[in-house]
Length: 94
Image 1: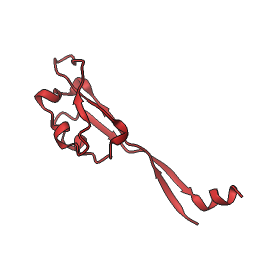
Image 2 (image 1 turned 180 degrees about the horizontal axis):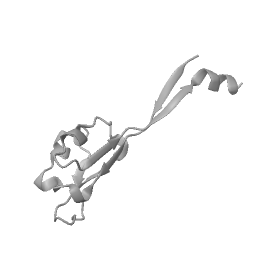
Image 3 (image 1 turned 90 degrees about the vertical axis):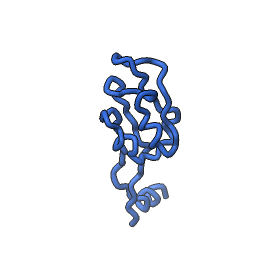
Image 4 (image 1 turned 30 degrees about the horizontal axis):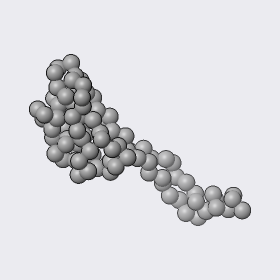
């Protein structure tokens, strides 16, 4: 019997109103190993251009952006699906 956990793509949420923007801060863009952060085209209420993720499917979920953000404006959630039993799935298919 084999028990595995399926890992899904991480979700990155940017709290744009708390962000000082890519141009004035940009730490998220600097620490992202995949270089996924770029300036948004819309300004937040404070006059900054917060980041947006260019290719969310390429996010590795390393958490660098969330850990290094001085404004706590980034949240990364790694979703895990419960344990699966691949042997039972295989047996059920017979």
